[in-house]
Amino acid sequence: QVQLVQSGAEVKEPGASVKVSCKASGYIFINYGINWVRQAPGQRLEWMGWINGDTGDTKYSQNFQGRVTITRDKPATTAYMELSSLRSEDTAVYYCARDPGQWGQGTLVTVSS
Amino acid sequence: EIVMTQTPLSSPVTLGQPASISCRSSRSLVHSDGNTYLSWLQQRPGQPPRPLIYKISKRFSGVPDRFSGSGAGTDFTLKISRVEAEDVGVYYCTQATQFPWTFGQGTKVEIK
Image (cartoon, rainbow over all chains, first blue to last red; front, side, top):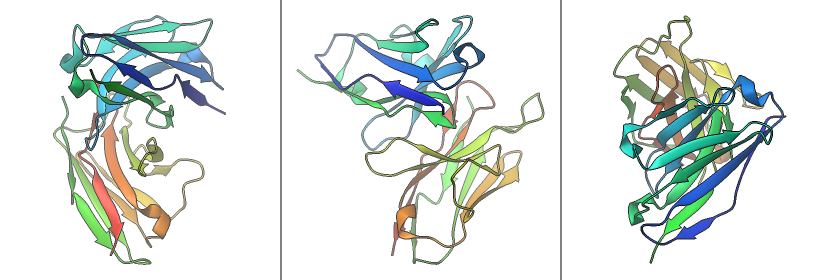
């Protein structure tokens, strides 16, 4: 079955960067894109960006322009989301999702000095 | 971007009674391929979103048939025919017709 398994929780200082991975299995990786969505405490879900699993083409939310980079490794069937210049407001659970029907388990990123 | 607006934001329900959540989009969600990519998600505390419904009314595998979706264009509804204790959580509508994906504010379903 389709599985998206994310890397573990991270604690970062303000100004640092974080890179979260999402290992896909159970489907043909290059036939689908991967989205990244985050959820700050008590807030609604917020889309960050998307990558085409085959071509590597990306789309990003304007809310994160310049700070987020999404990449993928085709042979490893893994997508990555890197967020830079972290601030306390970036404390959130970060999810990868192939589509609304398939979600990773989430990765808690805490930004604190 | 397409704005998704849910009502109500909170829904206290008696066990065994129905619940209904509305979702309105700021633009039509009909894609150029003819499909409408409107989904509903359930989120329990500390859990990732659980997909319930896709393309307005299709249930994902394993979703009880007490959950149903309806609507068209810009107005959509999620109904729970008889609320059970395990249905407590926050429900989100989401559209994937157009980038960026957008989500409603969430509706908290709780037991009276």
